[in-house]
Amino acid sequence: MRVTQSMLSQNMLRNLSSSYNKMGKLQEQLNTGKKVTRPSDDPVTVMKGMGYGMQVDKVEQYQKNMGEVNNWLDSSDDALDGVGQVLQRLKELATNASNTGAMTESDRSAIKTEIDQLREHLQDVANTKVGDKHIFSGSMTDKPLYNKENKSFETGDAYKSDVSIEVFDGVNLRVSTDVSKMFSDIDGLLDKVKDLTGNGSSDDGNSFGKMISDIDGQLDVVLSKRADIGARSNRAELMHNRLEMQEGAAKKQRSQNEDVDYEKTITDLITSESIHRATLSVGARIMQPSLMDFLR
Image (cartoon, rainbow, N blue to C red; front, side, top):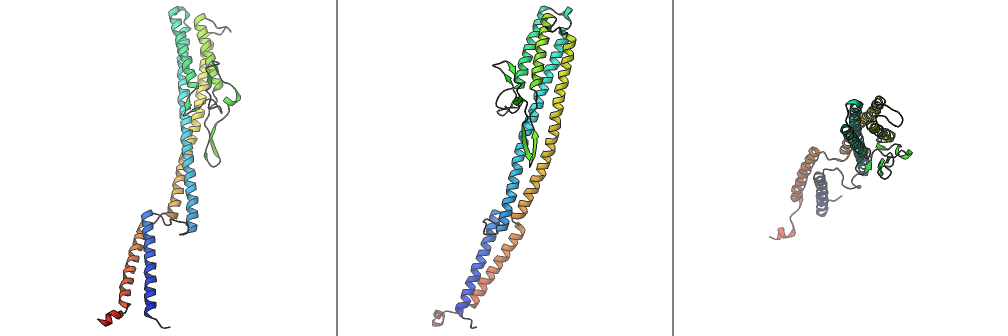
């Protein structure tokens, strides 16, 4: 086959164009840090990248859910700690009030006033909220456990039902704590101790000794609830660690799939630039002089 000057020129232009395209692609990879910027670059890599991205997004959402779990459990534990303090103070007041011979009317009045304040504090604790949700109201998170209109603690089934938050595929952690009966019982104890303090005996004939024993019983209930919360907090911490590992693995896979290897890409760009310069140099040599050069 006869090779003409026109063929040499066309080949040189085609090679130059190819070299430009390759350098442009490498430059784009360095600018974006990604191996591919559009599906047509590498459909398989793009599809895998979308899958890894969805995995990372899902893990991040679970981590946000885990934050909500910790908020509920920490707030519940703090609130029950407050309930324990109320019971401890009530026990102290009941013990003092049991010394009926040493108590004056003023002393009994002061104790009854403090019991009223303890009751109000207990009602506030029962209506503890995380964000806009009442954490002790079961599934009725939009309503308080202590109903100020009825002046009583709600005890319906809905206020005892569980609330769970998904923290992994198929894994839900219970964040609610059934305390409606506990709050109601403690409120009843406050009434009885106040009644005993004022009259020396309750309507049902209970004594201070019986009341103090009942207070100890409620303290055990509070401790039991807090132990349950602590156990769930420990599991939440284990799930948090697992999610961190999942996040690291998903991001590593996504990075290996689509992130550019800077050292290799820079080396490829320098190599392509060298080849491009060589192509230009060779092209200038093989181009024959034009007619105007002969006429000079």
